[in-house]
Image 1 (spheres, rainbow, N blue to C red):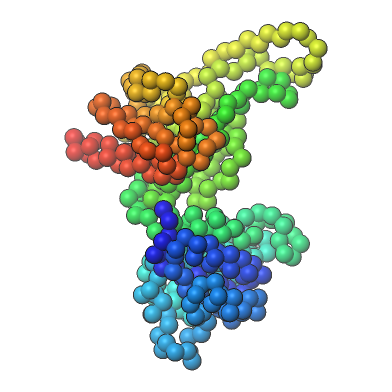
Image 2 (image 1 turned 135 degrees about the horizontal axis):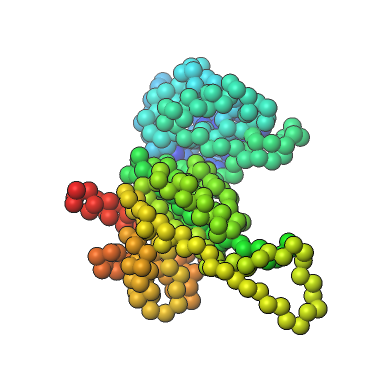
Length: 401
């Protein structure tokens, strides 16, 4: 979802990371959003209003009194689709949690009725303090979205949580905040990525899955209001904020993690590429080069998806099928053999989809025989189409009860 014609209000508070808000405003404008910027007095110590006026194309708001608008907090509240505070200092968070309104930004926060994103950025000891964490929980309980900071080296020289997340992370959260929350109250259990089966202390067997499709499903479900548990094999992807991530390596570890959480899930989307086999015995020492032939004996891994199909009760179960040739036939066989409700199938040899790509071209196969081809689109948009299909199935189930 692009932000064209959306009205975004960016509040900037007085932290060293305030300069990064200029990049966020620039990114928002590049997607066609209309941006209004509100600066606190502290923010103006780090970055001047003229910078934001040039980037946003609008006058910058920074005071409750003395400006041309006698009620700027009401005017802005009426004009905005979403409010994001980037960065949010400990002082601002404390005032917001207490309902105080000493300046324009905190007053606007009380008047604003749309989605609000808070992006904390501060010293690690401040961020992890009991009072700041309590204040953040209070804001979250009131429906505000807390975008957690990153861990890394801070301006003060210390290392730990407190770094302001980059604009692309916040852009994703802004897009999600504007989506309809039609998955509220549901828990999605999603698997993603490959598994790795060790051969010796150095080598392992795996596959080409990047995890991008499963991560896209997790992000899309989160954006639509679901509680999301993502069980991920080894990937190079950044953990999606707002998602509970469980890291695993082998197929047996993934099976254990999935079964432990299966009963709590309403929808299970098995996007991981789980290894079908593992070496029968892991060598304790590294295999040395020089032997002309090496024989490895494999044993079959448990079929997690088939096991879930046998044991499901209230859950809707979605499987993925990465195939070559006769996609409808393979999808239908997998759906029936493993008692699935929906199969998302794709031809891994087709241009625009498959492993490691940012796009995918898939087909949706339903239990009642329906089969729909989707055009090539981003994996995030594919994820939304899969979720649309899941909601359709849930409505059909409800209608039969």
